[in-house]
Image (cartoon, rainbow, N blue to C red; front, side):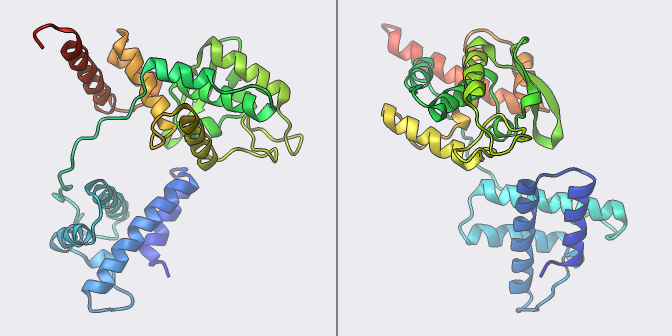
Length: 297
């Protein structure tokens, strides 16, 4: 059973922040693990009060997570959920001080985004057959992902009214419900036109652009599965997710001289530091090219 303080926080996220069901499930899962820790560290007390914890108890929670084998990235995410939880209750006056102040995330290895080579992306897209409506949909879908650097959730969230074929762009609702206009290029626009001609919705008022075989909005899980099928068919690494097309989009733009600020806007990143990771990818490619080509390398 959820603690009332947790229920109030989730309701705030839903009503006032417009959080998606996926986001709400994530916060609820993180806070449920925290309540599990409190019960275990309180000798099995059935209803421990999360509002009564202090910084020392929160540091113990971080250690407890590490002891259970959680990756550093997962621990950091759970701590971030707690920061949001206590920040909300501090504003509400439910706690006198925020116990997460000074709480540090565990060190974690720097992971560079997995990007595909330009030739691999082109070959992958060109290899998708177009003999059936669903194959045309897949080609339009992955052309749009790569052409606009979209997140998968942004892709499946596209509605018919979001497409501006004349301008070669789509209106995207990104994280935090922030909207942006994303150019997708003539190739994607052309395939979208073919797909819209073959699209058969289950009901006349279905707004989604991309539909499953039953005529309803496609899910992110289905996009992931379809992408891995295409990778396997091409003999490429099936561990890559469709998000690799977004990473490839950013990396290929920077490799060809696009400035970081422009790529930030195209990706819909709120902070420039989030985009800067792609400069490391490009730098690695430069070093690789040097080692491969220079006679003294």
